[in-house]
Amino acid sequence: MSMSALAALPVIGELAKAAADITKSIAPLIQPFADVAAKTLGDTLKNTSDEQSKSIDFDTAKKEQSVTITFS
Image 1 (cartoon, one colour):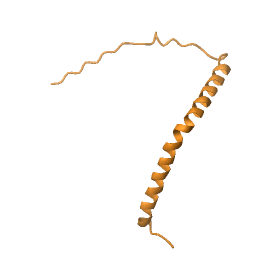
Image 2 (cartoon, one colour):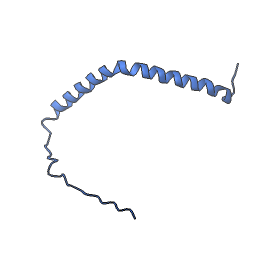
Image 3 (cartoon, rainbow, N blue to C red):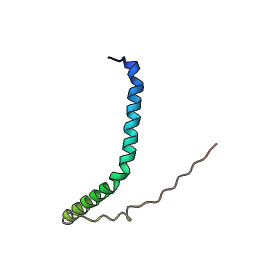
Image 4 (cartoon, rainbow, N blue to C red):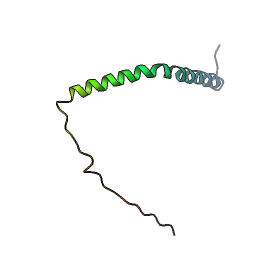
């Protein structure tokens, strides 16, 4: 049995909706593991780059700007 392309569009739409629902359901379950992995990776990178790190003072580069808009 074969389907034409136009007849298959509703089926593809339903499959996409189901995939989105599954993703929305799984994402909160995976989030804690992703947080732990990101923290571990950040700690590892911080510990290995301490020797190569250089400090940058962003306060001195801060400039105040003012913008004036006039409507006529």
